[in-house]
Image 1: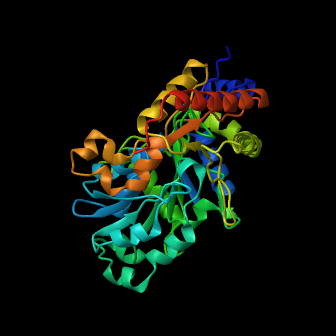
Image 2: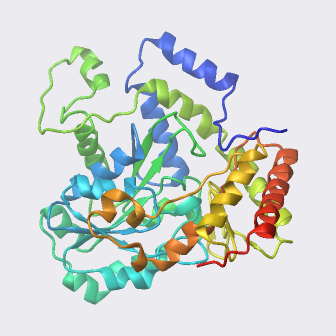
Image 3: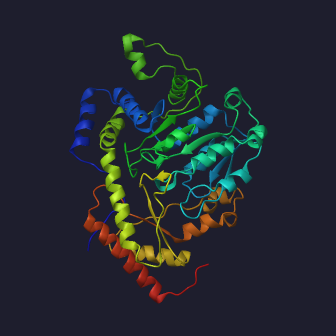
Length: 412
């Protein structure tokens, strides 16, 4: 029986050589390779500056802290996302305001966002779920509507200067995604990528803040400020301290410790140089799944391209029509028993104990709940062969048939 993993990273001799080069260089922490990766990411996604960090979670929190988000503030997030999106809001003392998703593509419902906006709203954090960009033009129009900007209540100089709700995208999945023929990150004030081990582009662990505020802000100064925050508030990083023996430094705030070391950036440098090939292969796999599964009436295929948007093909989110939560789980167990690893993305936030205990109720997010009950995420990774793609699709089809043939429990 075949054994197909869910999402192993693409590791080969090029990465081994680049990491070895870093090890022999004597510079393991944040240094020249991290800075080089920042430049390459900024060039690829067409933003003024990028700061690489140890995770996307750290990046989102640093941005919220820089914006001055605090207790009494509200940040709008999707109910259908990984917990990190809301956790960083809680870390800042603010309140996550959850809204439901659009049924076809898992992205934020703009009408639901508009209804959720209050004078306390400081940030909207859209999530490009599975790599599919949200409807950014509609989101930009929304935050710039007269009635929305008039009700906006800034509590510091940065918010006053921006003059509206900030768009801080949880773009953990969507490096390489396009909206209206431009990188999706260019439609945000900040977009934060993840380079976690299972992401399209990995540094083992890591993330990046894309700085893309209006021109009234100085991207270089914001980069310096965020970099300082990522190093305990120290005003010089290691490279700056050792340049011309300029060892002396100051600590200007009680910051955090979340910089990216060169040993991780070295993996990212190989990954980004071949990222076009990665996306090409992932698209081929998505297209193959669609072709193989489109013949089945029970298959609700994911949306990963339309007239305005092109996904980064990160997650293939297949939904099974007219099944219950229990049936979906039985299908997953049957698939695993046949040697194929699948997953579920994501358990909606109101179903997690931390948020359930805060009073969030899944009944208020029916589309997210329905998607969660029926979704199965299929394996997608660069080294997945065409033969293996067919095996996965056939295994899923056989498993659905097997479960539904002996279980006619209605979908509720």
